Length: 221
Image (cartoon, helix red, strand yellow):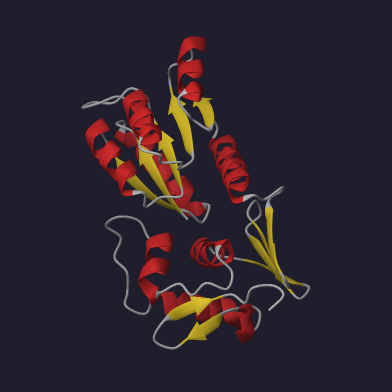
């Protein structure tokens, strides 16, 4: 689950990126409006955290440009601007939520989960597929009645696979979901993560298609 953070304050960005990582999400950081607009246009992220006051372009302009281009990526505005007019402007332009600084990290993560649930068509925090249930709030995975907590990257792997059950995701696609910009990735990192998940539960929880990638069996097949 890759999240794009568009924020010019390095201290805030560092804290948020660490919080995203701890919650099993991969965070990429754009520190000004121009870089942020380019990153949004690439459409590589599941959600955008968007500050409004940025050098080299504003958050409002980024949001307006994305929606005008038909980009439906979920956007949560995070800003020190607490005027009603600013909130209305952001929401009217297509923001999915609006959070005023300072805020508690736990509240931001809860709002991220809620927005992603709405966009994914999930009514609650649990993603279900046959015998598999992934709780996005507690980061626990249940398989055939066995419930185990997942590490941040194990969670990211299962979230990516369960978002598209039955679809084979390649090594590169999974690496993009699990790791952020500039992170070093060992050549067998995905293999190791999948090995750990299978060891916790059962080999058949994740299918391996030699030379192509991995999938979780689609319920009903």
